[in-house]
Image 1: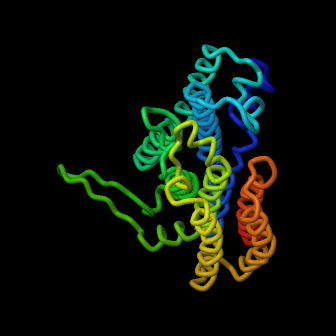
Image 2: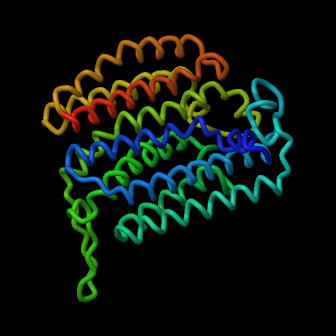
Length: 314
């Protein structure tokens, strides 16, 4: 397997969907809590990247194994196993190697923090695998948008904050005299959830846009996704609505003074995002307009990351 075919197998260009929430949480931790742990930052970066690559490689492998329809836009070029004529044994070996790397650095992160990271990491990893693997992968059900949005948008953002403030009682579990007690700073958790909503909805919409474009092929391949259940018209309404929720959450954080007034600059991205929404709603094409959902996610959330980073400097 060449390096190029490996990058295609893991779809390296899509890793932005997990790295942006990671950076968002990192800069928020510095801005809100005035703290940064370099070692934990490195451990999480490596573990997160390799977990994402693992789940993508598994997804591509499962699509290759389960595909009933092997023609149409992009199949011969989109799936790296087909495009590069990769051996199944090689693909499986690569999946195990990158999985071991992900687990190794995840364990190192846990050892350097506490059990909360172990619990969240284990749950996230399990969902990541079940998303693409098993008798009924989550990606082939109507719940793909919910799981991908919440776990990549919120959980990654939360963990990327928590690794810097694990000793500040944001969330803690205490075992004392046979009793297990959990303490949660619920207000800060609410703020973090509001912070992550643009990531949650943006990632969910990437999945939703993909499924809208693939309705016919998914029916042929027995992938019963959300758009198949609620129809294309309602799916497009959900697609539009989710973006607007992100802007509302951002405004609320400014109102309660968790984010500075400078954060309202991100609202200006609405003009570009709205234009992209209209274009996609007029024509749902994997080839021509699906990319707009990725652009919207990047535009909204990178702007938010930059604004918080600037606020840290100021």
